[in-house]
Length: 208
Image (cartoon, rainbow, N blue to C red; front, side, top):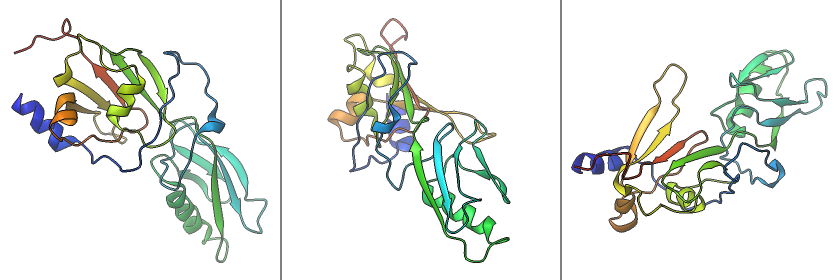
């Protein structure tokens, strides 16, 4: 148990004071109305997101692009640019720097037209398993609540969050004690796109 608590404290990311909302996808991989997503300046771009990129006074360089599965977008003159993992501001700065090789003082604006990447997955001993699109930043506890809460046979001390790491890195595995968050003040961290939450049941694990 001490090891579990240590991992929870050591790996948990500080929860944000700005809490978002989660909409359930009815446990399926069906379509979602992406026009209902709330996109703010700290939104992290993901694969399949649709971006409107405008270069002032250069309509030939302005266009709507879809982020490819490899995390990049393609633009005239500058070619491929890494988009995944960046905010719109960071991507704007990267594009601006590349355009400076060809244009004097380029002015770039980026708008997220469609959010197609902001999902987490919840499995195991919860009220409703499935894929959950996130509207804004969402904490672990919020996601579990929208998944119908923990089932009576859930092993609350051994919830696991699987998180995809960067290219060439191993996926992270974070062990979380739910009661430590709710009752003992452990930090309730925000989820990231692609996170998978697994809530084991008593039949899945052997308790010490």
